[in-house]
Image 1 (cartoon, rainbow, N blue to C red):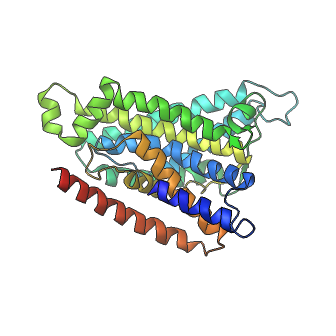
Image 2 (image 1 turned 120 degrees about the vertical axis):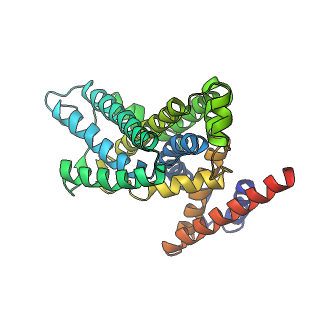
Length: 315
């Protein structure tokens, strides 16, 4: 499906170069930027889905933890306009936010697994809680985030039409590929998500495995928010809301099973790319914004139907 969409878009851009500017470098750059940040978040969400759990709070964490990173950085003179300025402060803020993301993930895992309640419910409550915490910590106004060098270049720079966020997305995709497909922990994720009882029978600790998956989801939510803030230069307290559904949609479109135990890193990359390629096409066609939700909704249903049919044929 991804290849088909790309072929149609390239042909249309060659036939109508003035009205459908898909191959223009500026459009390619914008598209890659739009893919990268939700793609980074989707890597953590995808690992958690393979382990058989969900996190609906990653969008709220995205906003909260990027604001905390900026607040810590600005407090310790990490703003580029500060006099004197600190090159270390943005990294301090980032480390603090990433650590909080991991702790939030562990807290969600503890509540879900200790009290044996669905992660959907735990993280739905978490989404509302962290959304409220964001407004409590900072309010509803935008927050400036103009970090000093080398942080600004590492997370907000560009190499040609490729933004640093896309490079980070690809780096983490490679890391997660080896973790998921070439490491014992990856086997544990698939095992506990596919058949918890069988995983326990062969000596896998499902509580520890799912806790790691929740922690990774929190870490990646924090990292995606920080990268996005570095690119834009400011943070909107509600900027991450809705991203949790986009990332789950990208994973489902990429072939993930809603029941856990099935998925791949390549599926996350292509699923995310497909979702935001469609968004780009709709923008180029000047279609109303609600068309995007319609197409993504249709894609989710189509992907689930196709995946179910493929599994039945193989079975």
